[in-house]
Amino acid sequence: MIDDISLNILKILQQKARIPNVEVARQVGMAPSAVLERIRKLEKMGYIDGYEVRLNPERFGKSQVAFIQVHTSGKTEGQGLVKTLSGLPQVQEIHYVAGKDSYLLKVRETDTQALGRLIRERIAPIKGVTGTTTTIVMNTFKETARIPIDDQDLIR
Image (cartoon, helix red, strand yellow):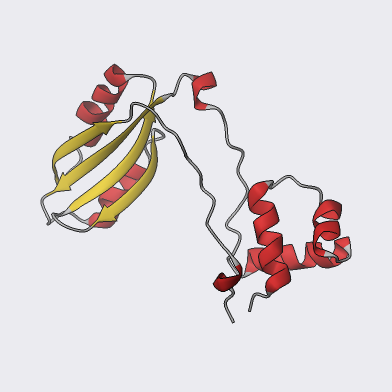
């Protein structure tokens, strides 16, 4: 069960995961030890999956983003394909999508040449892959991993 206070803690942590526990406690009107206990409980309950640092991709020469639709034969063992794709560090997201048997990948590379090599040498040869369709991102205006939550999202 999650209440208003826990929901507020989650909102605060989504905004700034490194916020000091004392500051979270001040914002929700609780003792720091009680807030820490709630955070640990939220982690155990699966509301918090982990904590990550967001790096600036341009600083690492990884500013080329693309979405690749990977078409499969339909006879593909999905878990094997997903496991192989998950092992590629350039692949940031993998989604199985409705329609023709396919997966949608979000990938990040250095440039279009590297992207082409990734597709030709690492993705296309995977057993069961019958083709790909690539959409190259020209500009990204918003990118977030935050989940939109509000008071109506309380789970009782």
